[in-house]
Picture (cartoon, rainbow, N blue to C red):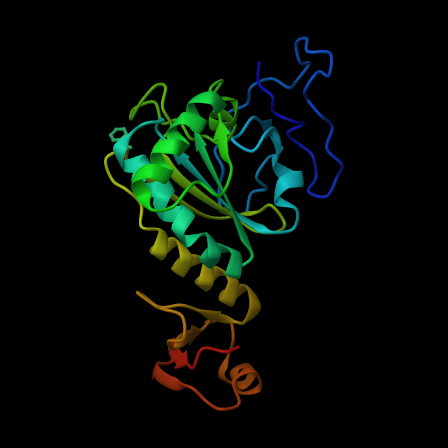
Length: 243
Ligand code: BEZ
């Protein structure tokens, strides 16, 4: 029985626990498979994790979240990925981003795997790993791609902003480990371009010049960027990174 909370809970609305305190079956919603698109509201859920039962909206609060899924416990690529994210946790925190992993095994299995991660990766798990053995969250967030595997989640990353909107997705096959430095770069771009009327060019890195968005004409750009910009083409204007 899925532990998912109300699917249509508005961010900020108090959680209604979907765990029956008497231990009996949960009267929860039907299993719904969502296909999440950019700027959709990511639905709420409640599920076991290595840090106890997590209600997603309460746990996230107003922070940004990276939720990343793994095919299975005790798999080699995932082991390196979890170690890598644990090492990079201060970088996510600097950006106001909480991290949560997900794998389709039990909390008991996750705890045993966490010991291997600490032993082999130079960093211990320092964020919750959702124990999605009933696959309720995986189905809710469309993390199982049946042509890849009927039962295991693919390597998906969801970047979710403080209003619970989906801002970026990445999906990799099981055989390819993700680049979490690239993920930090995309978060830098998202947070910068939320604040200023700019976009970031190919391979942009923090501190490099950015692009003035086409919706800003030269007259408006003068007010926003009084120090000037470079016009490569009328539609391609570059400017020093603001802020
Ligand atoms: C891995 O995490 O190493 C892995 C998982 C499933 C298939 C192949 C590799």
